[in-house]
Amino acid sequence: MSTTKRPDPRLARTDDSWLTLPNPHGVPVEICAGPEVPIEPAAIDELLTVVETAATLAAMGASLDRVVCTPDFHKGAGIPIGTVLQTTGALIPQAVGNDINCGMRVEATSLTVDRVRPHLDRLEQHLRHLFFEGGRRIGLTPAHREGLLRDGLPGLLSAGLLGDGAWAQVSPEDLSPDNLHAAGHPVASADGFRDWINSGGSGGGTSYDSIIGSVGGGNHFAELQYVSEIHDGAAAYAWGLAPGRVMLMVHTGSLSLGHQANSTGQDQARALWPQGMPMPRNRILPMLLSGDERRIEKYLTAFANAANFAIGNRFFLALMMRAGLSAVAGQVDSRLVYESPHNLLWPSADGTVVHRKGATPAAGPGEPAPWGEPVIVPGSMGAPSYLLRGLGNPRALQSACHGAGRSVPRGSASRGSDAELDAFLEEFRVVTPLNHRDPALAGRRDILDAWRRDLKQEAPWAYKEVGPVVRTLETAGVAMPVAELRPLLTVKG
Image 1 (tube, rainbow, N blue to C red):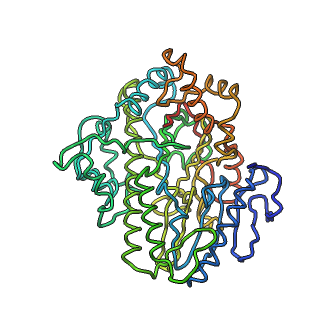
Image 2: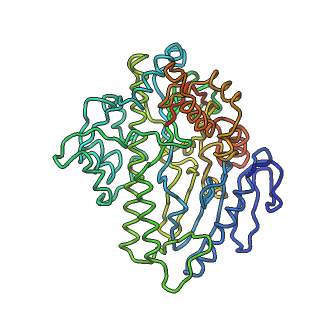
């Protein structure tokens, strides 16, 4: 599997920012990618398979209206990452996938990089303890768990604040309505996750949760950054950004709850499949919005529960980052800049549904975002990240990318250069469950080799360069850069 900047002969470039993909189904398919952005041929193969769903939907009385791919477009597991689908009359669970509401949370702290940089050794130790050595201590009651799954952060916080562990970092700012703009997806029930709600026992007391507060695997992370450059002073000021300001960025999703919700969706899609209609060759199963309401509601409720969990998970991970900072730098104030989802459905009253998989909303200026919706584009590990403001481009279905995008498959990346990895680790701090500098591991090459293979999968050479991706968003009129953030350290699961 290769990635190349040479034009794929199946694509037609229309301008410096956009390409089209002609297809036998006549579906408008556009890819937002400048000439500098490599495109993976295997992702094009996969996308052509996805477009076959147009025939499936037409046979069911629905339609696949448009497909837009963002600059981080790359091969997924059935549907490429960075794909936005608009349908009418149906929704497609697979077009969101397992990691429902995978997304980003960015906070601006009261600290400056000069205050934090001298303490990075101690901070690394504290964060390893908090994230991987039993230090997170996130106490939850069944009321907290059910409140979170049904109503998101408002439901979690209304069940009462606990005083220890990560809870100790909750501030009045966190309770402000201004910081709850993406707080939840309210639903009436969380019965599909009753096992997790009651996982602390039947007594109803507080128990320390083993799932929430987990970073997860793959490209998920919690990162300490600082503002290195301002591109839009007015928007940056409105968002609380200033040069040298220390930032917290969290990228994770719904973990096992998302897998369970997607499995529910697949089960309901199979149960609703029209009798006598052959299963589609691409195995993508839509659900008609006019179908059995109880089955559709069962999926959408589980979907909302998982989405709410993801918001809570990012919230607690940010609290853990705050706890690490306060342990080495004293009192830390932190305010939310934005909570941005990647994998969600957006149904409209007219029967259209926008599905974003590995893509983020990028609405233009308006309420509640007068400068445009914040767009968070992380670079590869060790590379800069960017905050941009959305422009609401209808050609892009008001969507932007959620990162730089993978350029080398995980298997190939894991066989990358040891010398390159060593050079990277000399320059950058990665906090993982295993401390590779621990002398006790010196004789355990098996453990260290496995750790190195995993880390190579997320190393900088496995991803596209973030600069051309951000330039494409700008030249395409999708989003404008506001600030560049440089990393100080990254926590990886």
